[in-house]
Image (cartoon, rainbow, N blue to C red):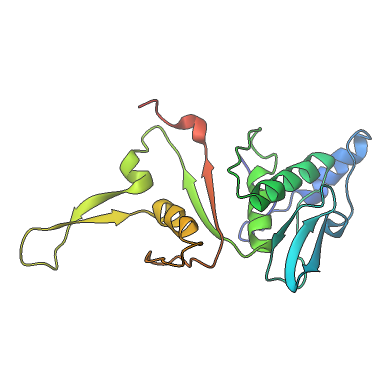
Amino acid sequence: FIDSFYNESSGLTLSKELKKIFEQNPDEEIISSINDLLTIDEIEDQRVLRSTLSNCFIPTPLKELPEIDICITSTMKDLIDVIISASMINYPLILEGPNGSGKSSAFFYLSKCVDANVVRISISSSTTVEDLFGKYEPNTSSESLKFDFQPTNFLNAIRSDRNLDNNNNKDQGFSALKKQWIIIEELHLASAS
């Protein structure tokens, strides 16, 4: 599995190679610029990232779009639009598709566009409920035996998102004012129990 369309540390760029493949397939249209798909507009004194496909938008602090090294095909265009639409209405989204098709790349690019905090979870057959939500661990700073609940980043992100309305966020490392995006990868590998 190579998901390096938008992985700054990999140094590997598949975008140009994919363009060659799609140029040989006239049924797949390639957009020359991300600006043909996404724009940054102002609505009521707030900057928004707008999809030109559906006209859906989400708030962004950016003044211009970040650089992108993703081959924007009609399929990728639809994927980006679906992610923006789901985020606009704060609706969970399940993306399914073959490895290397750009699901994670589109997600991480858009999270960068809206300055969202991303919590990434990779599921395996050995992932437990404690791995996802947290567990009780002994508190060594106390004189008596005491157990404290240690939440995971996943649980903190869920709590942070729920606390956006009441501004009462006590979670460590998460701002109630910053949007939390959670990506759960390899969900099909989760154990049945």
